[in-house]
Image 1 (cartoon, helix red, strand yellow):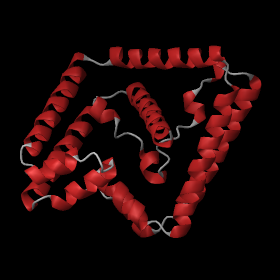
Image 2 (cartoon, rainbow, N blue to C red; image 1 turned 120 degrees about the horizontal axis):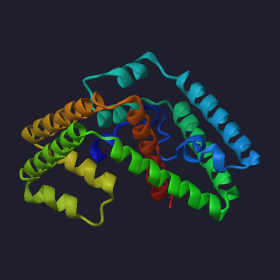
Image 3 (cartoon, rainbow, N blue to C red; image 1 turned 90 degrees about the vertical axis):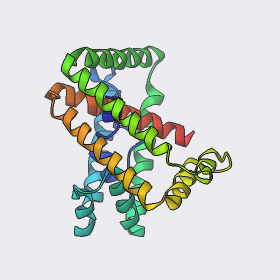
Image 4 (cartoon, helix red, strand yellow; image 1 turned 90 degrees about the horizontal axis):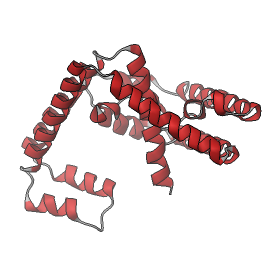
Length: 236
């Protein structure tokens, strides 16, 4: 499920707001003051307006990229990012900064007790989700994870000494390593990588089809939280 959870979040792919989860999803009303609830409502409305404004700028070609079922998520994100005009990039950056500023403003109003309550609530939600999984779902998730790990090891075994050196180069950043490795792949390695990605996609879909509406909602919330934490690490 850990592998599957990473892929849910279409809004992230569309608007590249991956590292700022909406405050409405992060802090629930029962533990907020009236002023904080009003702030959450205002932030949510602003976020919605910004998303709609950005979406309205998308061309038919850009929408086609996002709807292309033959592309992996990574391929879609890369192609979509490369298709953005200078104006769209500026708008996306401004929207992201606005969301982050609003989130930080809300966080600044939270007391220590509220923060602890939020933390405990999230922990309880994760526990409830795990307990909601049937034995069949757990088995399917475990099988998908094992297959992905096996495929990863099989791909790793094809790497040359030069390619391994790229991955171990401490002077390169993560993105630089990935770019250098992609450029070094042989045709066979590219095909193997694509095949592995297809298997992951199919397994992910198989798991998704077993989820109840409640489980799907829990998955989306956890994906947003991971995206926010990832964004905090990038900004920190």
